[in-house]
Amino acid sequence: MIDEEYKKNEEYIKSTILPKLHEIQREVLKKKSRLSLDVSVSKRYGEGYISSFACVMNDMGEITGTCSARFICVCSKEEIDERLNELKEFVKKYIA
Image 1 (tube, rainbow, N blue to C red):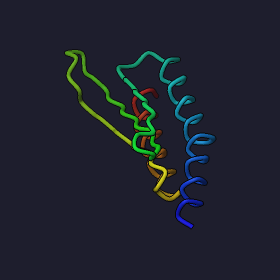
Image 2 (image 1 turned 135 degrees about the vertical axis):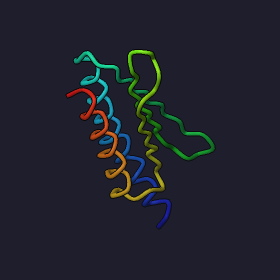
Image 3 (image 1 turned 120 degrees about the horizontal axis):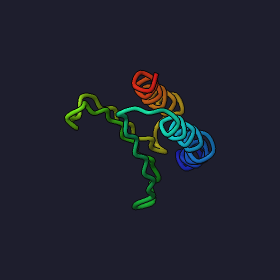
Image 4 (image 1 turned 60 degrees about the horizontal axis):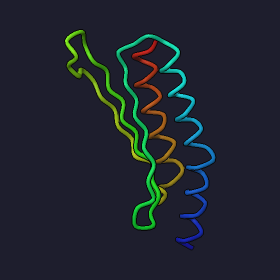
């Protein structure tokens, strides 16, 4: 049962979350802002995940706000969606 749920969540992350993260990255590139968004993907030790980190800097180059989210295949879809929404809201706040 756990393996089946893991595989469903892994597919959800690959087919839904990753494209949404790419969409957010494209939005960041469209507008001039002091926002940075990094996304990395790994399947170390058999467990897949996507990590993302967003930060905003002031005129001095100092980080004034951050948001990070890790999308792990062992999380529920609700948890994964909640993390994505938090990241989207942070980005939206600084590119508006």
